[in-house]
Picture 1 (cartoon, rainbow, N blue to C red):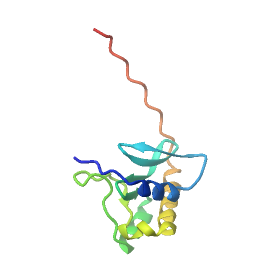
Picture 2 (picture 1 turned 30 degrees about the horizontal axis):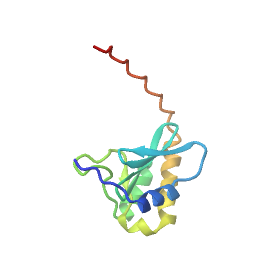
Picture 3 (picture 1 turned 45 degrees about the vertical axis):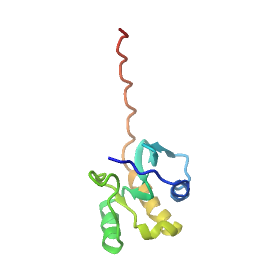
Picture 4 (picture 1 turned 90 degrees about the vertical axis):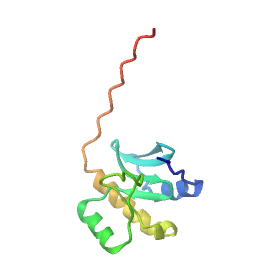
Length: 124
């Protein structure tokens, strides 16, 4: 599986769509970017595609009215996420609106517990 690399313009478009909040963290993920609230990802960048985790009602509305796309690797798209329409790449306002809806949806989830560090194996 080839991981698509976003351009610097894609990364900037993603960062500008993510609402500014002290609870929001944008960090690298496998050469792409993810936006998190309380440790849970609400939006991600996979190559040029921005994917969002919406409520069921919002996802149904988006998919019924716009040409969305799968989000993630073609062989295994990420469940629960929908890729925003490619035609929105130049529509910052509409993109930001749906990223904000994803933040609102995921902010309702309980905080993700930090993972326990793995025990180091003794050296031979």
